[in-house]
Length: 205
Image (cartoon, rainbow, N blue to C red):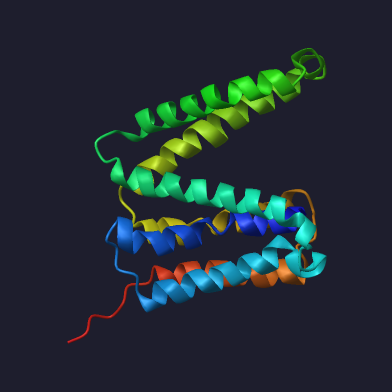
């Protein structure tokens, strides 16, 4: 399927978390939270580019299912980590990324040519790769898993939509890529709904 459709399918993850949290985590789903996550999803529709690429064809069903499958398993990461309360964030990161490496290793070894890949790597590329692995994966996941214990799953879900918005803003600022009208609208919807979702509600007398 297209990148736009795959992105939109993958970012169904917050919806899965929101729907499951009342049953699995006993978190109360308020009307405000439900509306905010739907508005954020609408923003994601604008951001994904699916409005310009059009409705996916039936032949893209396989790609759509892969995207939704990824979203489902990503949602289970949030839900299961909410249940794991007696392990610190560092151990969670080492265990989960380590297991991921073990599971993926056979596939990579069977499908990739390490000789060709290694010969095309320059010192600059190795440095960037190590930086992405250590900082943007290792440190980022430590912060992510550490935050899970202090936040509701619904909050984590809605905040998940900020990820692609930051990517779009950074690409516009650093790479001089055009956000486009749909990107701007999507960013406003996502950031606005995220902000409103976390505003404290007035207590009723």
